[in-house]
Image (tube, rainbow, N blue to C red; front, side, top):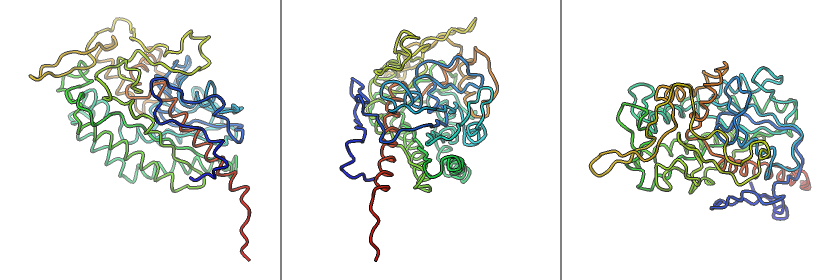
Length: 420
């Protein structure tokens, strides 16, 4: 999208390299040319922000809408949309697939555990597609060496992901969500309504060598470890890139109503294997590992007075009654193939961990699971963005909203051409 230079003063500056000091947004840089009255955040766990910030106290459907999710910090706090929209509807839910989004996230009336889509949102953000291609089996099998489906090897699971992407079921489901959301928004807002579909970030630096003998799966499985070789990392990254390209292609079918937001480049330098691994508490890695206890953020979230800190609440070791078994979260193979533990995982049993990870599926959403299972959100967050990652996503979304508003301003003020 090309914006006339005289409007550039309004555009949010975005740095592609945040560096050590994460100054995502300068003061007053998030002001919009046009105020937003109402908007809605939809999608899966990348939108609900599982693990980032404070976990919601009431969450009967285990949607895991955390306080530092990009929609939350887009709505309020330092660097949020300005002026703050008057109404904001946070309906994204962990584990949601295309079908669940249509069933649970478009309701216009509150139900227990399911907030309303909104009265008349002017724009909607959606993050979707990861669950539909099989991100859970990929993480379980290729990262944590738990074979899901049973007996599948990592390379088979990656290939299945590409096949899912190429299926008519995936493409039709994706287009159906966009079309349905667009049609509902148009009925309420007319041509003012707009959708912003966000992509995903690649997990790994696939060119470094320090991960070739690393696995995050020690202690989680009795099966042989799946080491993070260059080729395996490249293949998993290629799957993320292919998903992003398909999302962008689907958005292109609705050029006047939908914008694709690609933030992957903002994660450069902040992926797994950028530095020494396994290192669950590397603050410059913007993804959670199982044993991550540190999730710093350089922005005010509005929660400091409540929680007393700007670091993730509850991100440390889980304490589940009578069920503790410490084990290593990562191994580094030496030249003789002997694996040495590098750091210790949270105190939770192998059976609990496998059960919790395996339950991250859209079909498991919808029934209350109890407080003990809700606490397992600290396990379900693996390979999801930390708070700094959500800050980056937030910045990319604000940039996209600016661009759309400004392009409409240009179109509205452009003189009619003389066709005589």
